[in-house]
Length: 288
Image 1 (cartoon, rainbow, N blue to C red):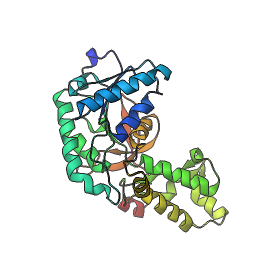
Image 2: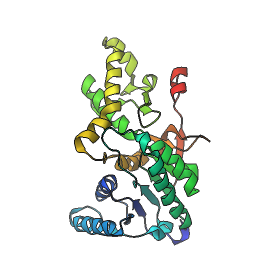
Image 3: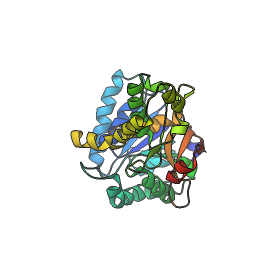
């Protein structure tokens, strides 16, 4: 990104499938974005989607320009959102997508590097932790500039389920799913709160078994498979939640280990990001 040439705030979306277009639609309701360029291996689809979104701008509270483009536009973009990749099919694990999506992610990031992109890269294809690492290595970007959607969606589901179970608004539940965005994820109960009160203390006071909440976690962990089986398509909220995570502390992926990315609590803006590792007990640390 040539800072001296950028006069507008631009986002590039790579991948105009279900996830990508869910993200693009959500951006119509955001302020502060001047342009959004859509890129897809199917250039006609990107063009058609841009035309469709442009018609909707009549009723949107933004003056954003939406158009289809190419990787040549990357140099002048502040943020690139990568959703391109093979979809997870019913009964398929995220890890089964590694080979094909690693090839796609690497190809996209090499094109971004070739076209001098130097902004923030948001990764929202699966398995997202591995794809975040692949994107970091292939793009040549600083590790602080490559952020995956991580367990943001898992954490949202957890807060909803805990809120329903305990009778609190999900916004007052502060519990986070850590680790892999997948079957080995876990909850740090020692870092879970209702408002400013420890969740473990609350459960003890109300004589609620932690085993019940563990069952809720297992339901949350497996919920993606149920949704995909019912919808017969990818879950579409992940890219938007990844972008939303830039506003607040979130469980996003960061390429922080020399071997694999680890989950961190991440707060970021389009210009800077800071990464924090949670305080975990020895058992949680091993799972992390």
